[in-house]
Image (cartoon, rainbow, N blue to C red; front, side):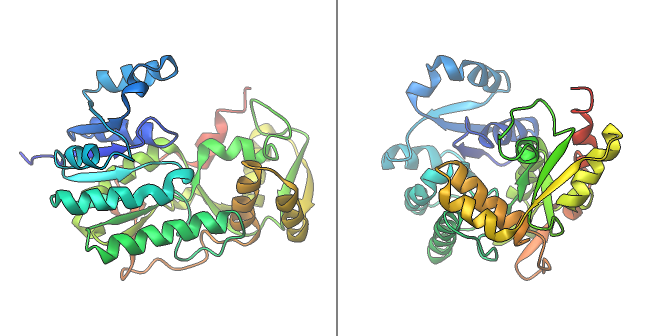
Length: 313
């Protein structure tokens, strides 16, 4: 019987982190989560902490800014996955330093979980976040640390929010009368359910085929234009929606006028929906692999299936 790699997840109680911890544990990996002591006792985190405990997750007390705690945690595992938020992306240099000192890590997956930072031409403030991710990539490579860059593209969990014009109307389901479409709605975009992203990530983390390459999550059934997503929703509710198209220059103006975090979300949306910077290049074996082709045993949720949950709302 193969011995499963030990996986440490940093940022495991966060947005994507909690799915990674669960996927790792359910895949049979000895799973470790780096958490602050204050997080363990935080009532707001009680449910997720109990969930982790039930899965046999091992908690290691530590902090991104405590070098020795990081080194001590990293020495106990084989693989490190970072799921820290964008505001902490630059601080991953501290993880790199700790991995270098520990000297035992077989693979490091920095916090990517978005577009390919090396290939997407974003506008500010998304451009700054991409630059930070690129800097982290180059730092990993310069230190000779084995890596996999996980390019998840869009999270399906944000899709309803996006379809509702970024929270202009808070709704339990996508619109049923009129819908705002950024740009002409034709560029291809990719959205995948967070649980599926986590499952592919854990598979890729320990796969020799993805060593020192990018793993792209671009499920064929989830790769479609915004217009196609809207059409899919219209078919489900049996109704044609009024469509309001917002030209790219108007989206740029809205980005300038918005405050954070909407400013960041709109800049990402411009990159996705107007510029089409997700599915506009061929994934070549020299730099990457496509996860749904590698891991046929992962049965991902299609966008058709995902949207079905909102029909009765």
